[in-house]
Amino acid sequence: MTPTQFLRRVLTTGLMLFALFFGAGNLIFPPSLGASSGNSVGIVVLGFIATGVILPLLGVIAVSTSGEGILGLARRVGPRFGRVLPLVVYLAIGPLYAIPRTAIVSYELATRPLLELVGLPTGRVALALHAIGFFAATLGLSLRPSRLADRIGNFLTPALLFLIAVLCAATVVGSPLIDRPAADSYAAAPVAAGLTQGYLTMDALAATVFGIVVITSLRSQGMSTEKQILWGTSGAGIVAAICLAAVYGSLALLGRHAAGDPADGTSLLRSAAASSLGSAGTVVFALIVVLACLSTSVGLVSSWAGYANAAWPRIEFRVQAIGCSAVALALTNLGLAAMIVVISPVTLLLYPIVITLIAVTLIDSAAPGHLRWTYRLPVSLAVILGAISAAADIGWSAPSDLLSRTGAWDNSTGWILPVLIVTVLSIVVDVATGRWSTPASDTSDAPDDVRRAIASQY
Image (cartoon, rainbow, N blue to C red; front, side, top):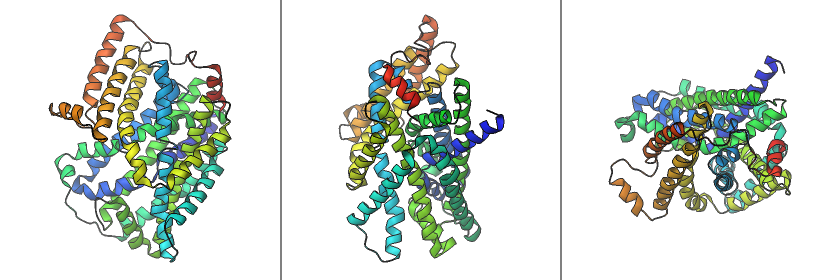
């Protein structure tokens, strides 16, 4: 493979990865952030990029060190943990929530306004028809995962970036800057506000899922050695991160020029589209939403099918993808509110665990050996603290209230400091005792059929 071929494949794969990350939620957050942060917009955006872009990038790189995605990372903690965590993550970010959410959001933000524009009825029947078409398109793109980079990176992503650029440029050039005061949280601590908003995108969870899609896509394009995979994955992650940062910055600037409620990113985007592009703005906004949601849905369905085929190899990839889409289609018709009730505590549980695992993996890749207690102790503490946050979310707040008395606890980010302290102490113990775990490249604990499926599923 020549250097030119390598760079071209990394660029295409990176554009694919950007589209997989950039769902409707990523579209809505930045305009609200720009409109709410007043004159501190620059520093708030930098904070948002730190946790909403850099953290997922580190997740993708961490996944590439195992070559197996979150399956390989989780097994470093222990075999049982290695079976349970990937399943819960894939269910949460796949058929039980994130995939049906893409269909619901694309209906509410794109299809429904278009139906209202032309005077057609909206409601459950319209949502069901939209979902059927949406998941038919998703399946058509995801059943050949070896071609995901070409289909998304060469077509969907350029179209999405072009439409976003048109909307942002037309709004910034054609609409005056709206001088709004910063909202309270942004005025008091702009850096912390940006960091928190980026953290709440939850894209670090998606990174553990999309990382294996990138790896297997690169393998299908002829990259076979560990060094090629690591450099290719890292390069694709950097391309995606650059695109995400540029789009987030542009959308935040759009928010400064758009009329509407600063806390409502959707109203800001609709206002910007209508004022800058007229009646065509509704169509442009709808296309942006559909492309963003569809590309994310394709990546998630393909990721679930690849994982499920590795875990249960008797059920082929195609059947897993169809089954995943069928479950998501059924849940779509229940509505977003019903799904959020279930998934919110699960997310609060998973996010500390996954971020801790990513951090320890990156430390491990730079360490002279492979850490043992630095995997087990911080991740175990993250499980406990995540469970406390999840319990508070479903109504049992006694443990959370007790921790809140310290003045350093909240259910979103309170776990970070104690886990950081335990991580440092665990590194000291590992270095002092010379106890190292099985090297990351050793997957001998995995069943043969799972290893083969991971290597060949794409």
